[in-house]
Structures are given as C-alpha cells and as structure tokens.
Amino acid sequence: EGLVLTKNSVTLADCHLAPMMAAFAATVEGAEALSRRAALAEWWSHWSGRPSMRATDPGYDAATRDHRTAKTNPKESRA
Image (cartoon, rainbow, N blue to C red; front, top):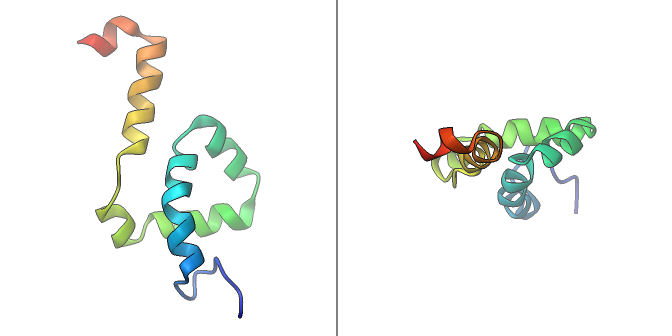
C-alpha cells in the first residue's frame, strides 16, 4: 500500500478515476468544484495532459461547449 493519485507513479486508482474526472471537469459545476481542491486539481492537470489521456479524449469538453452554445444561442447552434 502507498500513496495514490500522485504524479510519481501510475496506479489502478489513477486509471479508474481519470475517465470519470474527464467527464466531471468538462462541466461548469465540476470545474468549479475541482478548482476548490488544489491537490486534486493539480493531479488532474497532470493526468489530463498525459499522451494516453489526449489520445483517448472522448470529447467531453467540446460536447459541453456545444451544449452551452445551444442553450445560450439557439440560432447559432443550428448553423
């Protein structure tokens, strides 16, 4: 046993949490909540920049952006 969610090693905890954090951090509410947890935000900043995370990006950020645009600018989102 040892520390998990560090930048020093990859654990099953990292691999399990990272995809869920991608979805969580893509929402306004999730990003705001994450900003209040410095250690977790630092971990996510490190993990979200890993080549494996970028290569398997499901596009949550783009989907969230598109959804927000559709809610605030319905005519623009149909173009």
